[in-house]
Structures are given as structure tokens and as C-alpha cells.
Image (cartoon, rainbow over all chains, first blue to last red):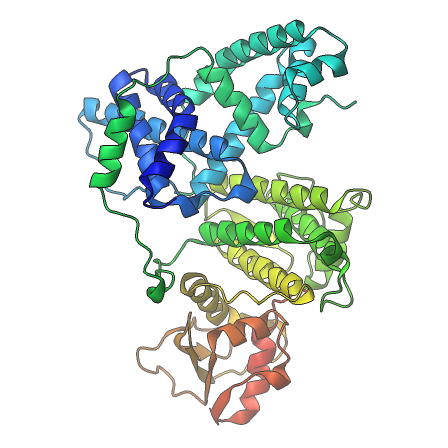
Length: 177
Length: 321
């Protein structure tokens, strides 16, 4: 993908809604979200080797990048507003350690949040995301109508959005760096 | 059917989180794609100068080195064919599968040392394999893929824990007491070694590592050789060795052959060295990991040849398997 504008366009069209949506969610600012979105895709375009397929999907990796970069932007803006000196520690948009720390931290928060869902919603979400099942397949396994599955997943995601809101927008920096 | 969220892996959990926060949210403005293209083309173009090879990065911290080595090992495991898992390694007839189960056990043991898993009593170097077997008990019915994933989950847990605790957190690893920083150098050594055990068993080229990680490992090895001599019961009071290591990770070190004082890179001898050794850095690392027979260690010796044996014993004092 490195240096290939057409490949960049393909990836952008598939994942821009996700990357922009996460950035917008964290930053609550359209212009900054657009900027972060561009940064994420430019980084991928320049450093495609940073994505390791064996460790997860491109979708999750881009989402994690967007989340981290948006959090960094929130902190930078906070320092700017407070008149604090810029951190003179050089910071790259991603590092391998930060990747794994963020992924582990976020996935643990999601697991905890899933535990707080009503059982029927939790079961529907778990089945829907485990093994790439369709709603039809989930409905068959749970012996409920497909429409009910969609409804439960939708409700579950809405509730998870509320449960994860605080963690998603205010993550502590890893202690190692 | 098990509907517990525990069966979801990290990637699936992240997908849930991202869907939860983006469902129903507006998409990017239509002109953002064109702006992105202009920005990408205006910036530095990614160019690979293959003739230069991998750029030499600055010395990594040991958490970064451990993470990278674990990631590479994970990729190796993902690439194994089903038949590879039953192939015999050079470790006392252990199969590839045995080695991976051993690594699960070691990660769990280490997590226990920092109270992220149940603590397991293993104060001696000799306890390394038995304690890993205890920690990995119950994996017999798991598929090879599952064992690999379990290992990776434990690695992520360790990385996260180290990230929280910091490099100066005290930890005891068998007979060695130190900090997480030092322990992760040992763990990097071990993962690299076991990765090569698996590569050799499956007819793959060995991992030569990069300059940065070899330097980190060599520095640590040179630092602990005096302790290794003491642990092995063969310190050489009053003697210094000048060890010149060539190739990636190399350097020249004046090493006191007793635990006092600490060694350092060559800046002029405090005590004239009684022996001078010249060898490849990676060979010394393999010897220290018990993966190179001392009889096959290609080293040029000048001075008191009788000190070579104790030095090699000291260098191998930390290998646990």
C-alpha cells in the first residue's frame, strides 16, 4: 500500500466512517475530528508495515489509532488552553507498546461493560461478534426472530456506548512511557 | 453453548466498542477524501531503500524489545503448519507444542511474580521448567491454535501489567532479584531463544535479531557476567577480561571477573585485562542461552586461557532451559 494513492482511497472509503466516528466521539469537534482522520490514514499510507494482520483486523487497528490520536489531541488542547508548555517528549502517532496497551485496556473495559448488560442483550452481542455470525445465524442459535436479534444488538450497543463513554474519552497514559 | 463474553478475543471486543460509539453517528464530510489525498501526496513519500536494510533504531527499552520479540514469535506460531507442532526441538526432545505450552506457563509464572496471577513458588533456576508445567496445567485438550492464542493473551496481560507498574518495579524471577526492566531483558532473551528452537525444529532460518535488541541483550549480559561467575562458584577476584564482540550488538567491554565492581564499555583499563576474548555478539548470546555448545564457540583468546572456562560458565549461569 505504501505510496499507492488508489489503495489509500480504497481503505479510506471502507474505514473512514469508523475512524471519523471515533475521532468525533472523543473530540466532540468536527474540525479536529477531520484532522485526526486524515492523520490516521496518512500514517497508514506511509507505514503500512505497522499493521500486523496476525494480531487483529485492520478495522480494529485503525479504530485504535483513531482513539489514541484523538485522546492525544484532547490532552494537547487541554495543555494549550491552560497555557502549559508543550511536552518536549517526542511522540509518534503509534508505537508497538502503545498499540498493545491500548488494545488490552480497551478490550478489558468492553468485557466489563458487557457483563453489565441484560443477559439477552449480552448473549445476542456475544454471538453476533464471535465467529462472524450473521443476524440470521444468531437468531437460529437463540431460537428467536431475526428482528429481535437486531433489536437486542442495537439496544446493547446503545447501552455500551453509555457505559464506555467515560473510559473512551479519558484514558490514562500507560505508566511505562 | 458457552455465551460468556470471555470467549471474545481482544479484536472482537474492540469491534464491539467501536460499533457502540459510532453507530448512528454522521460520516465524514464528502470533501475529506480529496483533502486526505492532497495531504498524503504532499507529505514525505514512503520509500524503502532495500539496500540499507532495516534502519538502526535507537536503543529500545526492554518493554518495547519484549513486545516486538513476542510479536515476532506470535507471527511464527501463526505460520506453523499443523504437522509442525509435533516436530521435535533441540530441548530434550520437547515438541514445538511443548515449547509453546512452556511459554504459557512462564508468562503465568511471571504474572504471578507481579501479583497478576496466583503466585507460584519457584526460587531456583532449576524450578523454571517444573513451575511452567504447573502453571500451564490443563492445556492438554486445547488445540494448537488455542494454545497459541492463550499464550498471546498472557503476553498481552504481561505487557499491560508492566505498562502500569513501570520499569523500576521490583520483581524476583527465580533466583534473580531486580526490576521489571531487567526481567524483561531476560524474557526477551528467552522468547528469542524459544523462537529459534521452533524455527530450527521446523527448518526455518534462525532469527538474527536487530542491532538494537542485540545491543540491549549484550549490555545486560556483560553486566551480569560477574554475578554469573559468583553464582556458579567460580569468581576470579582481581581479574578482568576484555571482551570484544563483533557484528550487530557488538562492542568492547572490560568485565571484572568477580561481582565487584560493575563492568563498563571500554574507556581504558582500570585493571589490565588478564584475558582478551574476541567473538561474534550473537554467538555469545546463543551460548548464554545454552543454544551453542562451548566447544563450538568461535572465540579468539589472548592472555590467560585458563580464564575462558569460568567466563563461559558465568555467561551461561542464567539460562534456565
